[in-house]
Length: 247
Ligand SMILES: C[S@@+](CC[C@H](N)C(=O)[O-])C[C@H]1O[C@@H](n2cnc3c(N)ncnc32)[C@H](O)[C@@H]1O
Image (cartoon, rainbow, N blue to C red; front, side, top):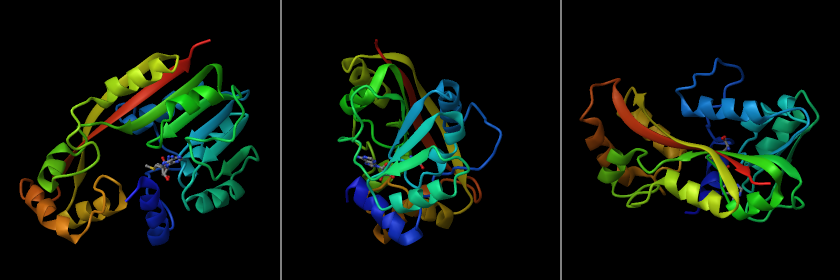
């Protein structure tokens, strides 16, 4: 199943994608999602146009509207329908969404100040094309160590079997497109699940295992036997990148 098929299926099933966006909260900078959000806030300003690639339901995108002059979310899956509703409910009028694929964007060359992708796509050549000189790209993505022990048991999963490091690949990719790497950091941390069924429910909602279904439950069960109830630990890995298009 392709990633887009996965998100279309999520839309049919849940009408949304559970991304953990909260309306208002205190940022915890040891948490990669909060760190990433803080990074975007630090580069945003009222003169800037920001594009969010793979914006999903657009809820996170909408939190950036008041910080920038113009904010545009890009999403090719049916989640765009939720994003259109998000724009209608947004307090400011500078937020729009377009149904497009990030590899072939409708923006003119060198017209965008900031591009972000929150666990979405990162087509470096297209990002370099639309960014103005000195423009910024902020990205958070899944690292190669993410849920590694569980993937070993299940025998597949995102990045399973890859010998390369996501961080190094990103640095090489963006330097190759004329970006200066401002920072690129690994974040390794763990999440806790209270029961085997709550972990299974989570795994159905995310693309960690392509086509996750009942046949995978026995391996998840084996994984969970190694932990006390309420203490099922999943090791997570994120990589956060901030890169500047050289002038
Ligand atoms: C993990 S979700 C993240 C959604 C959103 N950024 C968030 O943080 O809630 C990844 C999103 O990227 C989108 N996506 C995948 N491939 C894409 C592509 N080539 N162009 C644009 N979006 C894409 C998916 O449809 C999905 O909505």
